[in-house]
Length: 266
Ligand SMILES: C[S@@+](CC[C@H](N)C(=O)[O-])C[C@H]1O[C@@H](n2cnc3c(N)ncnc32)[C@H](O)[C@@H]1O
Image (tube, rainbow, N blue to C red; front, side, top):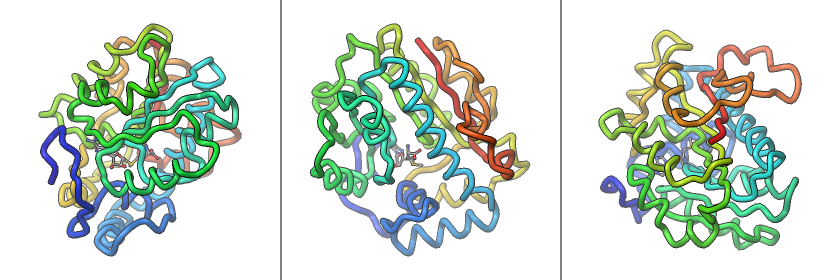
């Protein structure tokens, strides 16, 4: 496993990887047997996981559109995941082609696939950076981030389904605060996070992730709300992701979704 702050350089197929499990949940093909088997263990004990990841992805889509419609022209997306269309830059560019996006992830397989995607046409002003959120200052200082993001202009910081991979002992609130303190006024935080107060017992799901390359820490609404300290939450606040500014009527199973999400303005 990578040291904290140092992304792994090799693709490890001996243990499940969250990015590849998430890809499998979303119906992707960039995963191995070890990931699929872990994913099935989670689906058995937390059957809402499929609707949850789909709705989380949809929340990300609506939140990125919100940022761009509110004038944001640069997005720092940490915990990018394997490319799943539409990706952040595709959503942003469908509204404003001049939006710059810096993608950050610590999983080498994400790097390989994202670089291949970047080689495609029409992805101008976009970079992919290998860095670890456990060391937020290293993310902020990374030349690949600095090349794309001007920290004197408002930034859309996207932490979608990633902060739950930071244990309490690693001070995730301090990590988010370090990022916040680097952003100018008018910036936004988009954050979603798995919850432990929607379904009574998700110990088994946490145990599966604990055998993977990144342990998972589910949190309460109050704990997740603290990530927005210093930000002003936009309506409707921190809610189960299908209820954050839905495009239409939320799906019938929306209440089962195990993620909270919100958007805050600095
Ligand atoms: C569940 S996926 C989320 C993907 C995307 N943000 C979304 O919501 O659709 C989480 C991603 O965070 C990455 N990740 C986990 N821990 C990380 C860390 N400490 N630093 C950087 N990336 C991390 C994983 O490799 C994975 O690609």
